[in-house]
Image 1 (spheres, rainbow, N blue to C red):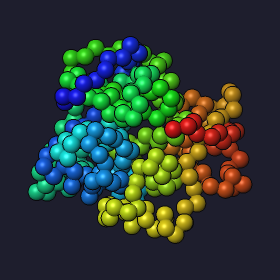
Image 2: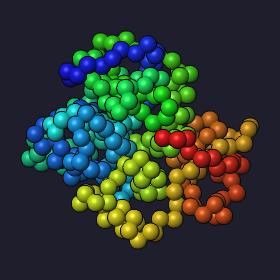
Image 3: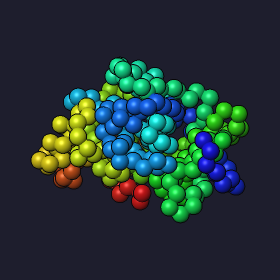
Image 4: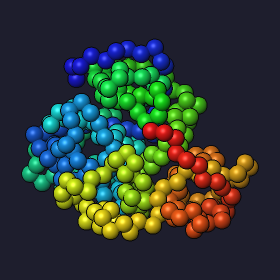
Length: 271
């Protein structure tokens, strides 16, 4: 990494729920384009997008931020709990492709409330990289080995809550795949393509898109004060009294309770 990164006075704090994978090789771009649900070939160098890996039935195995440094070098940020499963799954399809996957176990993912220069989405230096992140004045950093990043549970918790309220459904490869990209409202980012050609699950994604058969989508719900909901089939993720849930698009069909608790639906924060 050789591009200059302007130092920031904003304090950084570790985000231990996230981890990093380095993907390199002459066939890296081609492999990722064929296996993942977004248009990797169309992604410019020094940019990133939301992406994911699907089952053949179109269910999301894992969501990740994919950074393209060049056609031969990528960095993937995904939930830490599913890194091993994601690596094992992708490696099964390498065959003779010239591509390698390396978990960056010495790297630290950190959050910062610091803006990047206007129009810049990725900056890198010898110490790591910084991404413009959804939400006002937020950036995500991948800090390489040797840097000292503070641990602040309160700041990391607030960051995760901001991700939730923005509608980022951090699906891990350690979870049971059950949601389609449309059910998770991933077209908002957009995190999948219906035009780039074949990839695992593409037929289901395209059919849902072009035939308009989606009946459920992602919602941010807030539970009433004092009520702690139990695990519910509609719930994707919960933090305190807030949750991401897959509910019918028609609000008249919403259940009276989720996980036995009363709730209200709130609009996602701007992205």
